[in-house]
Image (cartoon, rainbow over all chains, first blue to last red; front, side, top):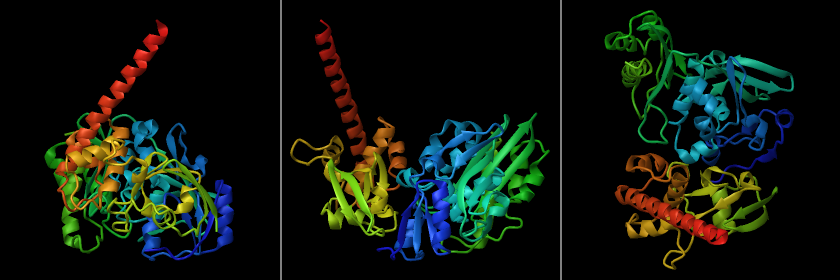
Length: 285
Length: 175
């Protein structure tokens, strides 16, 4: 199908994009890689008055070492993120999860920031950002602000970004030595969204779990931290039975959807199985 | 309407396009390059895959204005089958019978070429992974995997021969 008419603005810089967004009003959308937006436009599930294309702003693609954290430009493509030596060294969970996003052609164009701003609870990267306590950087005519991932995902496909705010980058605290990570996802085909996904990072010390971060994809209208799992496993000796017992707490406090791919009960069960698998892989048992 | 300038299969085109025009519609309806088909129209099937600045892209998920200043290669830019001037991937698809109805073939070939750019000698498993964004409802993929293996061997051999020829010339020049 053919998208509805819209005005097209190509921004040469983040500043230009912010002014264009402010001028265009509430019914404007940012066009990043377009890999989620374009199907919505074609199916006319979205019909913005204006698209502000930020695809030519090279400065927003940069991935930078800030000492204790990485700053990943919002327009870094999935293809770029998966191969980036800084991401692989300091945020391997992002590299692992991004490698499972859609398919190679979509990863060439889709962007890290776009996937987060889209705020699809079935998308892989929101749960990863949440698990890693990432901080999202937003810019508007009022200035810049930092939004912790825990506050960024507000509701189904709804982020904390104001209509005139542009996501410019994401600050991801580095994982130090001793961390193991894994992203486990269950989906039907490459392009299908995760029925359930589990993003997991575990730090081991002398055979016990010192620190655990677990977040779930598609177990509610927003990505959720599996806090019951984290609390249970922290301080315990790593064994297949302790990790399995931790996994069994994965669905606590979640409100998974029922849709044609599975019922809420099925998802709740799947979350426990996949969490145990993710913990086992991350703790390298 | 915004003006665009885009290089497609070695030819430069300048046009004014409506912002909502998809790249695949620009290729087919404006330029008559119907070698790139539209399959699902929801970016699932990969039939409309082209190379955009050398990387595979689904041309139904790209606006023509986004291709402004870029380089596009479609199946029509690869070579003409049956003339001896076909791309090794086209020849391998033909020889291994990697198609039945042929609808997915242009996208499948473009995605396969993209895969070999990243991995010159992929295993059968890596080929299945690399082509996961392209659907074929006829072949069961068996012969597609065989064709990509064959093209990969042919292209590596072709590259080795080209290198030998260059080294031979260099030796000739040095003596």
